Image (cartoon, rainbow, N blue to C red):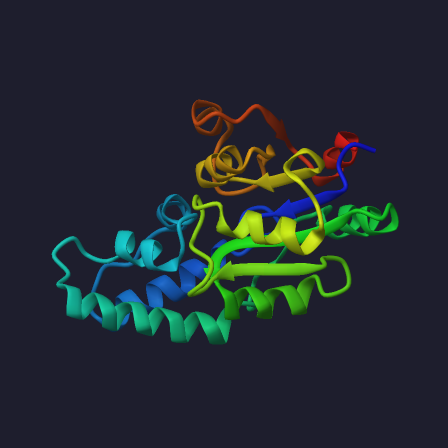
Length: 214
């Protein structure tokens, strides 16, 4: 068995969180009299952390002080509503159970802040994923390699024995910077043609296809 550890992105890979993200984005925008964003717009904004998400969502002429207020409103709302509609994609739970039965170590590396990652990890994946890493003072957001490197340290794996699964151009670049093979999920927030242009090599359409990589 070549791969002994699987590391997963969270939003768009393990969890379909787009509806909750969009709801919190629009709650914050409406609170400050700004136009709402569509689901498709929010889909294009995610992947680089929630600060980037809100910086893309606010009106173009938003001053820095107002942005911080909008961002704080978003974070408070999302903290309370991050699991209203969020759920694992079809086939994710079954795939993770199979990996566990095969003795594969697993981790999450996300651009969400650590507290949000911990909440979602414990709620959805406490029994099937070994550890979860988010943005913190010590771990920079992807595409910085910090999160993947820390995950490999915790899992006791190396780039040659680790597989990374993500759904965005950020995930592809992060894996490249770590020398880890990346499998790109097509059920997430980006379409295949865009991901191929960004360097995606192996793309899958259902979580069960990951098992063939073993």
